[in-house]
Image 1 (cartoon, each protein chain N blue to C red):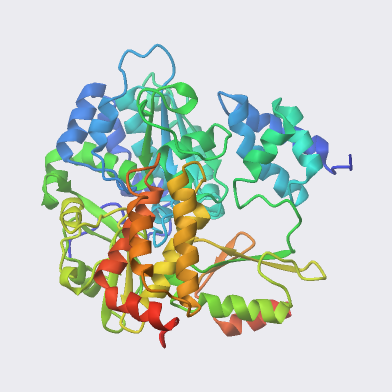
Image 2 (cartoon, one colour; image 1 turned 135 degrees about the vertical axis):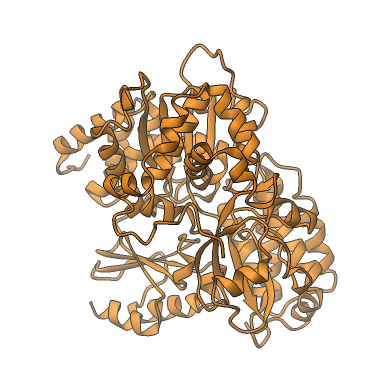
Length: 419
Length: 156
């Protein structure tokens, strides 16, 4: 097993204090970035191959490069700490144990795009995380690592925290921006993209907590070092994998991108609990895998090739004793609950799928239900402002495709013995 | 309009929050959180207060507040239990725990016990699936919880 990077010192009881962070890491990345030109920071991050760890896997350096350099006015960094994809609990580890690593990453990103203001949008339930982060910001400002003329650099950086309030859709970057502006979290039509018109209409970069926390290491040790870890230069670095469900040791494990799924469970998560039958590889939006794919390399492109996605890296293992129709229905219900209601295919589609599946659960399945579900789901893909609708449809379609017999059985008989 | 206790204190904190953002309206979610901490819920008086403070209409403030599940329009119990029933918690028995809680307290999820002490709310993923089935008791995570835990919390 390779030595972890982001989580190397999380068991150090002082890791969340400035003293602990200085001892363990020391802001080397930021100090180096302060001597670099913004375009060189962007090039370095591009060369590292770093891709967004929040779900979409978009190349981080490329995202930054869309921000207009000569914009006459403020630009913003917004930190997506709204970790809400079911199965995901990885950013919380960084927030609570390595808040200064996140702050250092934010400072580097701010230098790259020329921002002085950063807003951390943290999910409302992370009360403890918000408290730890708030203390870290205060301490960093007092000691001159943030704020006006931090590290005597002639630069300023002000970081604030906004707590979310229990809406999954605010993890979607434009929904998040709307929420940050004091509105309902309705995702925006694109273009314009946040890089040109984001928070308050100004150029804005939205990056995930884990993504930003990679930056100090990329800058201090170099793009080449980072891109040599993982499957290949387009799937580089380590990834935090939150593992839950039927494994012996659920938890957050850091491993190189591309580690085979089965190996990750066996070497890190204590092994499978029972015989695995289905594995969700990237949070519930990611299409489910069956045993044919249990050896898949856990990286962005391998999972895309298998018609799934790495998403947040959240792995949920379901063993042979689990009713997969029940899990599929629970996922559909989640999306029905969290649909923001803007787009008809999503607002109506998620709810209709839920109603049909609830009827089947009650033993009132009908001939043609499978086709009906597939028909509704296929109309929910690519037809809405954001991909919540696609996530629901693709998850359900994958369950139907891979476990069709189980669905047919439920349509015929309602609940099964494993319910 | 009813009386909101501690209003002066609220004003001081609200002004600080408003100052922290480049736009007044951006302080709306923080003000809603602050108000809920102060008065336990977002009632009509609170909506009026915030709308005046931010120069927004009460309907706008209500529209935003009602989009988010963490803002409550009625008081919750002194012990507010949020229970996740999403996939990782569901397979580990979250629904059975919820059912037991409902039976023991004689209320349905979303409700508050008659003496106002306990309330339960079924929620989506709490982001702590390694502790499934996981609950939040007020602001603290607890888990994995089991049926014995239900007995314990109910007897409190």
